[in-house]
Length: 188
Length: 218
Image (cartoon, rainbow over all chains, first blue to last red; front, side, top):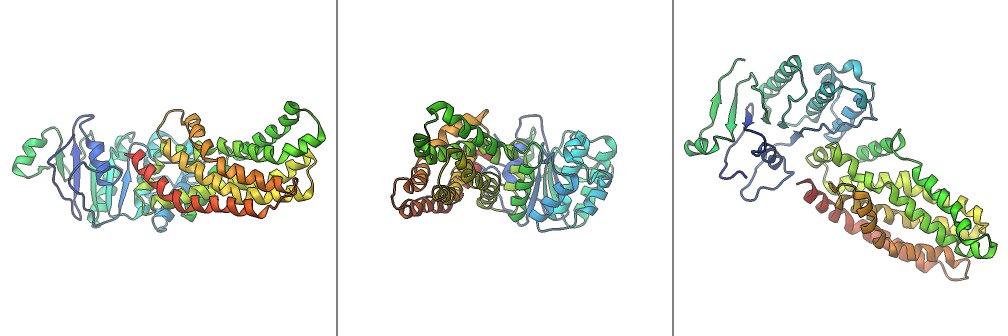
């Protein structure tokens, strides 16, 4: 599907993968996270990564807190409370996660990234089902993550108002020829 | 890994987890047998060990497609695969949880259900022992089957077809242990053999299951 691709993302950088449906955004992100193997070439990671996709891996019969606690233990046991507060989920902490709305579930899925403590976030459409206010909240968290030395590779349909590298899979050939990424200069 | 194990146990015990389903299914199978083959005491006590083993084995099948199926559907498996835990560890945690919520209850229930067939204490004791050493193999083989049929719509039926033939050695040795007391044979040899089946599957299947998961997650 995609070929001849080469890029790197380092500390404090985010890379936005754009392109129409079915062009290979998800495949690229799954390759980076190791769920899929590239046909040829290699992917080198120097950090642990946290992957988040269209479905959030939330267990409906566990409470919001239990869901986060589980992931925090898997990744080495940071306190899930600050993550809940960041995404305004503290009021729902004891509620079964199955009762949350789609947007709240997505926020819980994003809060999971914070408890993993992973430096590299690989996010497939992280803003789906978030309202405008929460997209801003997510961007603030993402910016904090980058400022703290983290990195992110994400795909999104909507324009995210944050300064980051972008790679356009539609115009991929053009980008490849000069070997540079187009820089999106947007509002901050 | 231990956290994953406890999470799976919690999920199984909470509403909608299907805990207890296997036990009730097992009871119903056992109760149906006299209706099918008649109420002749002597004949029933002859077939009872085998019937109890077969019932436990079938009851074990019920919850197998959930072992990996649920986590696959809601995306948890993707997240686990990208987490620091190796997939072999994920498999072992899930097998342990499945055994604790299915294999162990069946093992404890079988000697009690044995009372329905008027089985001697000694036979019921051996039935318990054989299930204790045999059910881990059922969970190990079954969970491996579950990892194979991921992503197949209505995989439950396919899973049964895959797993049942693989259960044959366990069934042969297990029922042999339980029967041996009744027919006056040595029970130690089949008991050792059934333990060997459990240990061999424990040694090999984590790697096979992890490979199957990797292929199915692509």
